[in-house]
Length: 138
Ligand SMILES: [Zn+2]
Image (cartoon, rainbow, N blue to C red):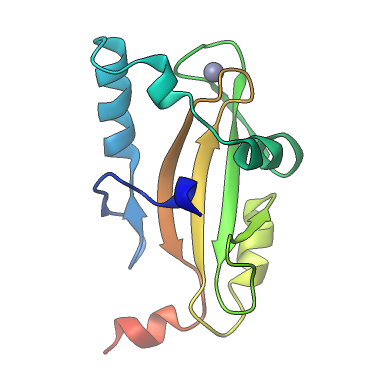
């Protein structure tokens, strides 16, 4: 699905094979606060992402960096074999770790979403399948 495709470069994350988008997030927020990009460009969560954020997400203690009115919701999608092409939303970190035991190349996309102003940003893509250690050792 297009809303999950990162159009910004990420950096290697702390876990092997993971990509961290927090630097890109800071840059986006900096450009927004500087007036270089408008709210319509950063608060553009699509309806499916909003639905998942409201029904199948983890509530963060952090406030939205754009509107500062609502707490951020952490949305996680897992992509991999035998999962829907658009990924499967998982509500919690614990559910992700349960899926991590399955054989195959699974990836977890972590996105923060504000249910108020529709701010959304990809935070991280990480491999969670049990084959990650196999491919890393090649
Ligand atoms: Zn907001």
